[in-house]
Length: 313
Image 1 (cartoon, rainbow, N blue to C red):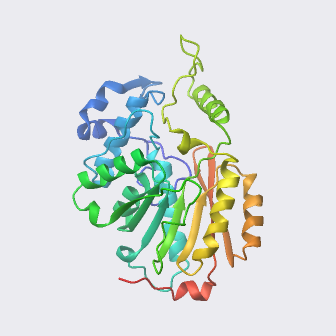
Image 2 (cartoon, rainbow, N blue to C red; image 1 turned 90 degrees about the vertical axis):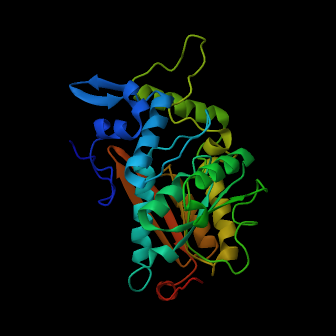
Image 3 (cartoon, rainbow, N blue to C red; image 1 turned 180 degrees about the vertical axis):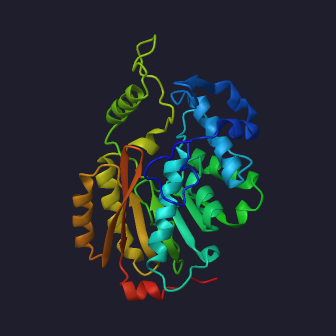
């Protein structure tokens, strides 16, 4: 078993997948296991295989018995998603005085999607309570179904529908409501065409042709709806809007955070944060194999204010 390089030390997926064990949790996965270079692996270009792998990982490592998403919706890679969670836990621990009572930590997940993956991983990893939002009604419905299908989750994960597509925190964070963290995996492409080009590059990286018999680009293994993959102005515009809105909730959140897929966008986001007088800004790098990712975190509280921050029970 080879270690997966550079994942967070607490990440349960630091070793190669034990497909024999995973197939015990989801027997249907067996039909997608193949042998390559003398070792068992999975055809990661197959969306059905990837979804079954996620089901098995969630059952085996996180005690999530019921998880499913409709065809075409984003199927997230779990090791990378849970890495974000672990680094958020480190960020919070470095800010709050004393040992954290994780069961009292409240997190706001922006754009939870039909998969509801961050609330599931965050609660099962640390016991955090979540408010999860999305602008698409069908995603909200599916996320609620996942939560309600798993015993006890409806008490700790609340799904809210953001009905205004031009708003992020407004209409979601209530007056007097407090959160330790917000997190987000923003749509990072500028257009549907740019998203399609990104899918083609990923398809090539998987060693597959970018065209199928009808001449169309095949669906990527992780799929994704338009609102999950792109928005006008792309990632930079989306995060800048998030920054502007966040200042109105300055005293209600310890750390605002979001993933930033494009390194070149970091400087533009920092400039936006300077304009709204954020008191603290941090860029946290993460890695999975050869891929480098990052999230940016900001706060309108001083380090002293954060250390004494308390939430209502």
